[in-house]
Image (tube, rainbow, N blue to C red):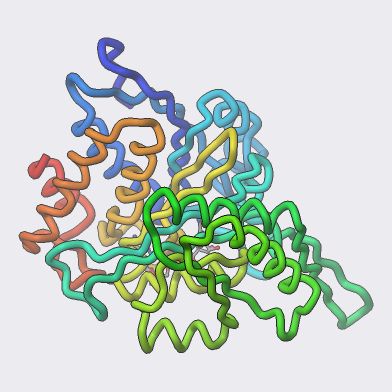
Length: 344
Ligand code: NAI
């Protein structure tokens, strides 16, 4: 990592490259941020720590203590995706970090990039996903031979604070409508509690229209007419699934950013996973992590640098000559990154 230039504002950031396409997209984003911040605006003091299988091989820990310590010190992380083994193996690094640092709000804006033709134009919707509870609480066991059980945890505290986050956001950014997405017809207690909390919070925000949709219907409604949604407020599992669905409106998982926000710490990461099918082939689109980094720049109060990166990204998409294959281009990760750097 280049050493920081201490003449400008220096931000300490914990950098977690992840695995699969993680290192490729984090390298791209770090290069772009370094160029965008320099020389006068801001610099970054990257604290590099990894997690997952690679970290275990090196340190004997899936999430090394040094990573926890670093996030406690910096309180801001930029994270690539980490592979989670299916049907066994270690617990999800992402879920563990979100719980450990109480990153209760997963904020995911879904918006078209200029110049990129997608299935739906002019999409501008926000997914606010509760990030610490639900079936992701990780309480699973074999109740008897051949009977596996998983406990869904929904609390009044967790539901109220995520609803409050969504309504506060809507008020601050003049968003008109919030849909709470649920399955309270079946899960009457858990999703019922989630809705009760959302309804109570909604009463303090009369200027924001409040609606409720059942999650299966929501999937159909989204595909038929995504424009009816403005802010989607939902639980952990539904939010995970709806995010991938909505990413397809604007060009796919290579584009959609995310922020895991708590009161004392924030970790910025793309919606996508480690994409093992394209890892190491110079095929990954770094846009989703770059847009996550733009959210991070706003979070650390660097709006001018955020605007510079956004402007360069939009120029590359508007020109449309150096796009990655997932969005119909012919370029690789490195050529795309060079194009953004040139646009800066
Ligand atoms: P995935 O998001 O990694 O990939 C789904 C599809 O989207 C693949 O075809 C992939 O090539 C494509 N894709 C994803 N990101 C892309 C990018 N930046 N550029 C171009 N194409 C891209 O989802 P999948 O395959 O279900 O999961 C793979 C692994 O990632 C699993 O171990 C999963 O647990 C983990 N994962 C990690 C996350 C995180 O660290 N935050 C989030 C989601 C999944």
